[in-house]
Image (cartoon, rainbow, N blue to C red; front, side, top):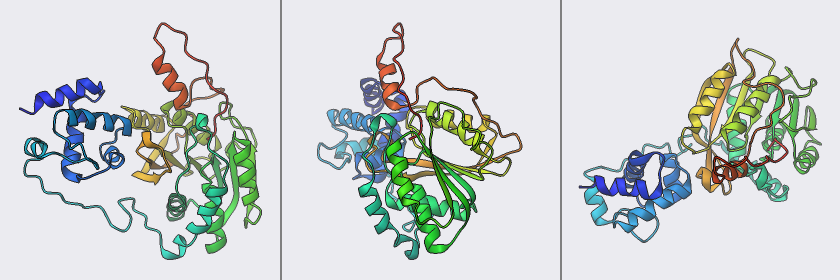
Length: 350
């Protein structure tokens, strides 16, 4: 009885995931209601605009209430909720991320919030989107717990300013960092970061570089840990992974990759690129990173902790001339297949 509604919604939204995608939204609604569209997008791993469109169609069928936050109607519960019991098994301390901020670390948030307020304005054409101060500290703690907040560390793009959180953490708790480097195409970000490095208790360097080009020789095979939050496309993730591998010293080196595209198959493509690079997925924490905005991502991205194997190698070499950013992808998606693809923007590091 309910199946025709599900199929109708899937057709109306032109959902790539089809009926299963609508069923996932309904199951999450039954489990979580009342729930925001953003939280629902996270739960089903679909872009927020897609989830909103599904819910709008379900409202048209009388399955979802017209009042927010999203919740099933009486008829919707009768058809789709069944006898399900809502059970929340998420850890209240870490929210399922595996890392809770101790009070001594959490005190650093206030200073980082002030830094974020003073940071350069976002450049959306570079897919820049700032993570929250709490996320910056969670990333630093993840590195610390993995023994990766030591030796030589490289950030490939850092509009999130996580490198400054690492500096403050090191000042407060000490460190064994030998060198901290930030590579970015945005001169404003580099100037801001360089100002924040003035009191770092270790060597630092900032380098302007377009990651469409291979890394300069001075950065190749130099770093024990690479941290990157690339553009939201799989092409961007593959390119940044390639440059990260170029920077690694070799087997046992680590990469901390944040990626949260909710396009169909995106995570599979990224994981295939990880394997192609000779990297092992040591840990994957879903929705680890929270962002200010980033509705298409559901406001979050996943954190991959990767370790270089003996077969580590860049998944691509030489200059890259393909698309990187979501703006370019949107233009491509909107262009008929018989048309010439649009020119890509210059720049690479976020």
